[in-house]
Image (cartoon, rainbow over all chains, first blue to last red; front, side, top):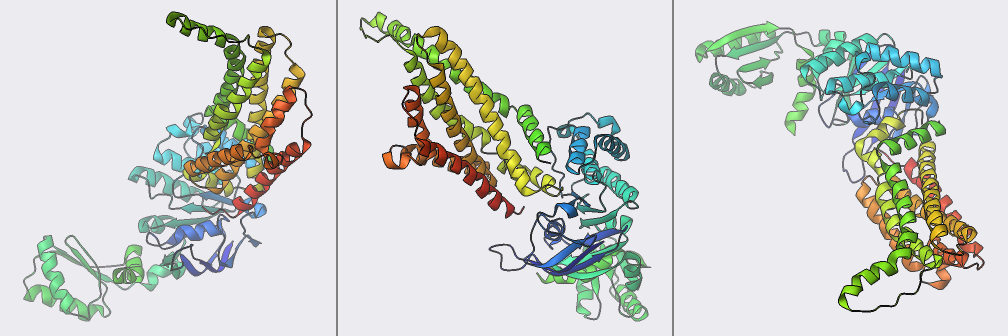
Length: 312
Length: 250
């Protein structure tokens, strides 16, 4: 449904490219998670994919049509919601959807039906005649998705749709995405790993403007299915003490350390488990948990991107 | 698509008060000009009578009212017009609503044309309002008011106003900051006004329309060159705006 080939973009005055040789392939009727830390190039990529920005080189196709800044035909198939939903605050919810319907060339009866259905689907039927300026963050985001769906798009681009929301708003929006994923292809950029884990079928990880991997989320997790070791100490002082000892052992791959937790990705589980238990016993480290567990997407992400981040 | 965008523009300008303010300002100054011309001698007399000073002010004529009208519209009204419209496009860039619109099946050129058209419509309505207000009071207050000549003058003023507005929209389409767009528009307005003092140049720039407006009111023939070049200025502003706006990236 979406293919892009070797996209490159460098902003004026910037020494490094914002994105470099980005190639992606997104299948129809899937939710595609575009994952990366802040500043990795997610928004730049989405702006190029939606025809808001020109790449310096490379090409984008949506439903086999080439995307360009003035490609009206392609945009007929595209819905988009930016990082923060920016819509006309003076319009009312239904008025906005009807306006968007007009832009997509829908006839009057279709506009009305679709607007009412989408307001219903977004849980905004009660606020149909409410001014956009009076909506809460979650409602605004759901209206943003509703307007993006108004043209009955084949592809829906969502740029960090949950990043500005509180937990309730986030849940509302993710539920909404889960509902619509059968109707169109969703391309969702985010840096929130749990969101990807929850709704996405495929994931691509971008870091420093380059694609680190693109893979089905289940195969990705099974590929990184080796158990990880999580050690929780009684307090942060103990955690620091343990960390200082572990750092001396260069063979240990420490994924993450925070508060009183340390997560280790062992190359050889049995051998390293014994080493760790030995260290804890010999140095009399006070722990509350020593657990072997399957890695989450977050652990995979940290493994793939974290190392590169730490070098900066 | 064009009419959808144009309608949205006009409704938006109605709701945010721009359209009403614009029409009110022009109507107000249209009204004010004949009234102030008519009563200025009385006002001056009321100030001076307590101080034992005698100033002889000739009986005002409709030409004084028109002179006042030209002054008000070419100075205060143009300044207000720039302030009101300097954010027409740049404000949409600032707030992000432009991105919302441009990811829809909207051609950038159509968007720009709708913006310019909305401004043109508002300018026409405002000038009609101003013309009607000034004509009614001039007709009742002064003898020999030449409404045909005044109508010609208003058409030239309208052309000048639209030129200033189009320059403002052009800058608004180029810059993200409405303040910068406003400063440059005001700068362009000042430069054009100064250039109008140079006889040879004034024949080819929109600000030259003002001296043609004075010609129109006293029945002298109008220089077609200024009118044609003013229309060319308008076309150029729109074309330039479309070309530059197509290069804009959020």
